[in-house]
Image 1: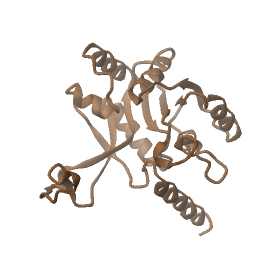
Image 2 (image 1 turned 135 degrees about the vertical axis):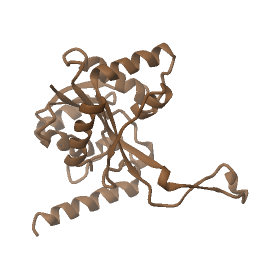
Image 3 (image 1 turned 90 degrees about the vertical axis):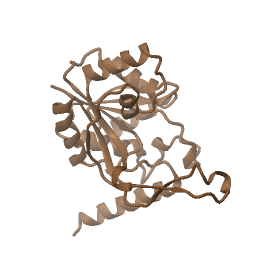
Length: 241
């Protein structure tokens, strides 16, 4: 059985206020997405890495993968106009060689902080439940803003944070089940779901969660770039303790 990492790298990165897509930002002379790929490269249970890549960046990503020893990289697939379409493009390639019981771990290319423990947990639960969505709880007070839109001074609604979670990636799912979901979505003209977790809700399917981590955040804004750099400094210091 194979465990295939499907890494999405199709976003243009407008919120980082950079001239290049966020997943290709160079941090200490290494693109952000390579840090992400290295987590799956080093994990003993991952057999293949597929990357869905933004148009025009394929040759660069292939060169960086060779430079940094990403030997599990099997294919770089062109991205689509949306995240949904990009995942579908990756799925179409994976179906050419993988089996229905193989597990696909769909992961954001700009989440370089994913841990080996999270990857292992996601694989283990996907084996049992067919699907596993990485998620974490919420520690802050959470309000809705519908009554205070535009700064009108309305009364916000306080939500019970004990009943709320934030999803992350990877989203682990068996290939056969993922293929079935996409076929059903197409038959119902659901073509713009943002992730597997939202697609499951739209198709009224059960969702099973595995534990994520605060370190597994998306590097999307300049502040988050700084946070990731700080994490790297801490990890480097630990090596000398």
